[in-house]
Length: 59
Image 1 (tube, rainbow, N blue to C red):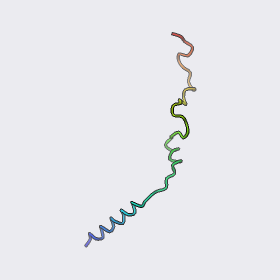
Image 2 (image 1 turned 120 degrees about the vertical axis):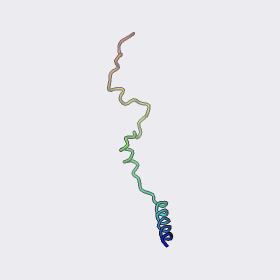
Image 3 (image 1 turned 30 degrees about the vertical axis):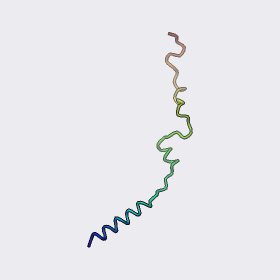
Image 4 (image 1 turned 120 degrees about the horizontal axis):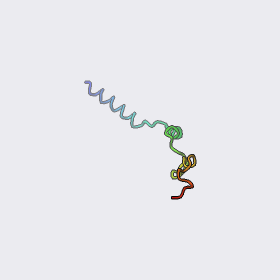
């Protein structure tokens, strides 16, 4: 007797999960993860903050 109700419940849950599509704010997620938006990944943003150790010296 209980198998029919159990199967119906599982079927209902499966249908709900199949049609579930949450709305995601990708802009907020990108900011939270710290992903650069439009920067060139090959440019070192820290390069100008420190002077080179061997700048001006010749070997």
